[in-house]
Image (tube, rainbow, N blue to C red; front, side, top):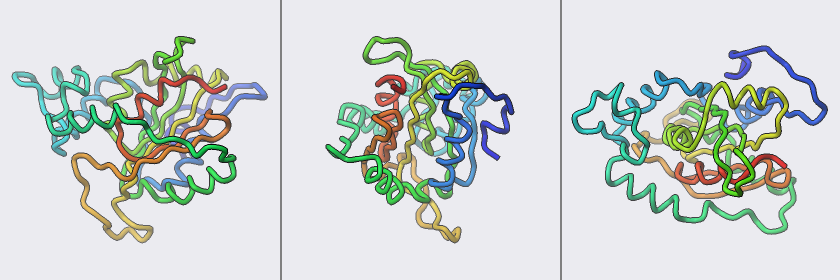
Length: 236
């Protein structure tokens, strides 16, 4: 059962509507994450994400603050340790990877399968309904993000609204953009054997592919590219 199915069994009508639960299930079959969790936008969940980041060495508690209260209310840029803040800024400024010119959906999908099959093994897949300011100024960009990076979740929370309200809009039939991101470094193989230890800043080779005219984007590598992609616009 998917994280979205666990949340609700509600359905909506509409011939053009995409079901976010069906999409999530399809992503899970590809990336093979060990666990899946819906990002609900709650303060308690953000506390957990920040606390885990501090334990991993990616984040730091703000001086003089109590971790589970004051620190988690700060933006990600304030919480990243200096080394990772510099990497985040460099990665965010760089291009997120360019789709191959003239590639059709069949060829892009074949590359998606090659790059993402089992990419999240040993990790948690975070499913994030979001509404962020659109870079084109045409209104909020509505979408769903599936990522195996907690840092990408925190960054997207800083950009706009995540959780129940955005999810309700997708379930009501509004058009939305599908984003899938992986750091590209699975922790275990298909047999459960360890491949590598996790690190504070996991980031594999950068790549981006677009399907359905850009309505579905798959990207891997640095989590810093996710918030920029989320602001590009809503499903056409």
